[in-house]
Amino acid sequence: MKTQFRNTFSALILSLLTVISPASANPSNVLKHLHELQTLTYTMLTDYYMFSGLEGDSRYSRDIDVSINQFEATLTTLTQDGNRTIKIALLGNITSNWQSYKQLIDVNRSDISAQGYGNSHLVSKLEMKAIELNANLAQGYQDLYASNPRAVNKWAQYSREMTLIIQTISAEYTARSANSSGQVVASKVNNINEGGIAKQAREFSKRLNKLKGAPKASKFINKNITQMTSKWTFIEKSVTNYNENTVPFIVNSYSDRITKSLTAIGEHYQKLVQAKK
Figure 1 (cartoon, rainbow, N blue to C red):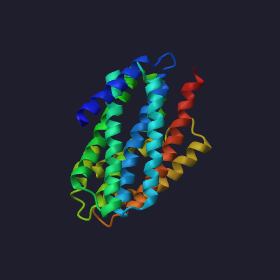
Figure 2: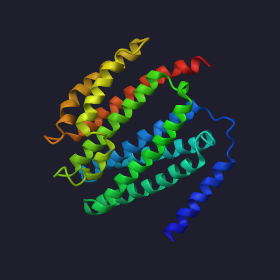
Figure 3: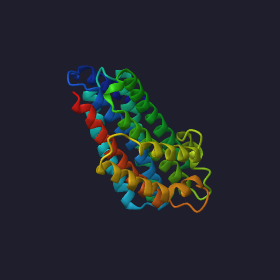
């Protein structure tokens, strides 16, 4: 029955996508939407682990609901702007995997609320679905960017890449912290950080130093980079030594603020692309 529903749902989505007019499709907008969805995918996973680790703290459940609403609104816009800009089959996979991901988030949240802990099998499925959904979104982004490299400013692209690094670091860190042993919960999530969380932390530091040399710096950019550097310096040691005295609340909070700074920087440089048109 579930398989039949899933097939019917996917077919319906694909049929809808084929009739949406692509006239207003803009590669810059589509790339922005895809990046936002990638960021939200890991934001929700991180918030779930904060919700789990703090035994059902309602704040993180509300944050998850906000992200779910943002994801669905952006996905709706993506299907309108992205038709024939992204392969229809890939859009169908993104939509289908999102529905499964959202369902797993709700089921796992319910388990925490009802019994104080999650079902390890369902948590593992949640992790893998997050990785699968992100892979779909990344494929769409990479394919479109490869054929439209001028659609994104160099430094805007750089800030997006840094955003995904800090988001995956935060997701793995909170996943490890949510489990007292630091082993079971992280068994799947550590797949999102290529080479390990410590290596990703070093990569982030390297990129941050390079970002400081971005051209046409302004007070706005300098302020965001200064704030971001301060926050990263504060959590870098904890992230690198993730097995010692974990501080998930601080890492999660500072990662969110770093993400906001990177988003602001990226949008600033992206305006340079729009100004040339």
